[in-house]
Image 1 (cartoon, rainbow, N blue to C red):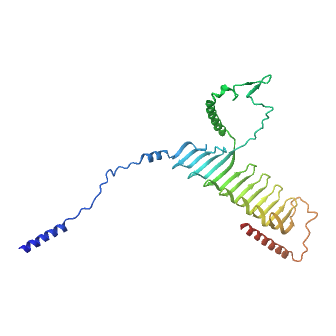
Image 2 (cartoon, helix red, strand yellow; image 1 turned 120 degrees about the horizontal axis):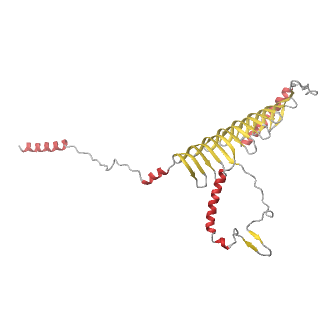
Image 3 (cartoon, rainbow, N blue to C red; image 1 turned 180 degrees about the horizontal axis):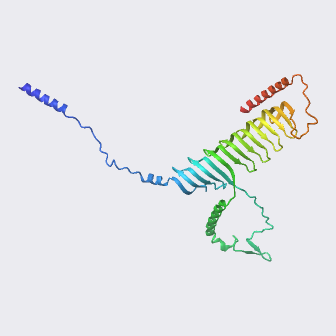
Length: 331
């Protein structure tokens, strides 16, 4: 019997330990359903500009009127540059000029110099003798010194109002109209120069890059490739005299094979060019236009035994010199 009791007690203890499951520890998050944004974050979100907005004044005096997103200029808007008086009107993205836009600057009018002998300062009025009368506008008048602080504040307000009104009434000159990328001219656009010439074509990072057409103030027109603001590649130049060049360009100069038509002489040069000058090639007379008489002194016939070989040898020499010059410029 004692053995049965011991075994029963052992089984009972064992059954109790195996049958009872330990509950896992649970943490109760009080007010977990309440989500409250801090007050400073709420005010910061309210202060951020989104969508169309009234005129925003910058620290440096610039102004912006247009659309916003996440406190950045995004969409369509107009930006007024206080220092230069320039205006940009167009598309924005990520606080930068992106998309299509127009940039204009004020037209500067020449100031006429004032002769001090003809127009004396009106602060003092002369009187007979060696004395002078103090006027109400004279800063040396003691009566005006007491009101200097009040007048200075009013003068500043009037000056600021005058500057804003004068900026709005300025005559503007369109400088660029086209595509922008990351605050730079990039894509297709037209640039109007101050001397009257204008360029229409491709841009990359504020420089003419790719195919474009340049209309110069003297009447000449270049239509061709550009690289880093210079004529580079294949292009056609039409001069005011009617002469025409078709060929290759390098560093803003005629370089390589090209043709030049002399309108008045009715002649055609075809050959190699180097640094803007013809080096070796053939010059022929063009047939006369309808109604024109044949030339009295045409170009004489070449009497060389092998003119093609002479030209080819000269071309090889010019090409070698060009290659050496290009490799030296890249270093």
